[in-house]
Image (tube, rainbow, N blue to C red; front, top):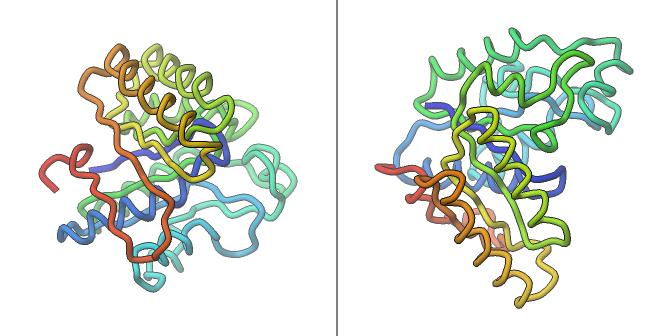
Length: 225
């Protein structure tokens, strides 16, 4: 089973959430791997994949060194389409799909982390959301209580529904919350609003992670795991 983890923006906490999700599934005996479609601002290897492995409490695996878990790594810290252009590369969606499919042959569950939000361009011709419409992965959306997050969250839910993408979970990341009152109000609003878009989707809170081995309960999203 493949899941796509996206965020309302580039600093929503996708990498941390992806890592702790993988740790949860791993703790339940699920053969799980994480993937990052494209990493910018790095050389040779993906910092986000390393973060996933650290949170999962494990070393890098052979698929990391094969490039399957991060098919594209670009040196310039920018949107994937620009970072790729500056490195003289065009992101090939078929290569992305092939890498994910191969991971799916080796693992029961693949958690795929995106880059930025859903409308980020992968190339001059292709936005991330168009790639996801073709692949139809269940979506897990990472949000927070930062200023602007309500607007960004509702816009993302709106576009997912309009594009026929299924959101199965909304993860409320408490890291960076401006204060308790704002966090409680934002979380309450998301709990009330999410069923209007996706009645079966679940809301899960992620606290500020203090320990690399801290297990967060994602059972509501991953039913049966």
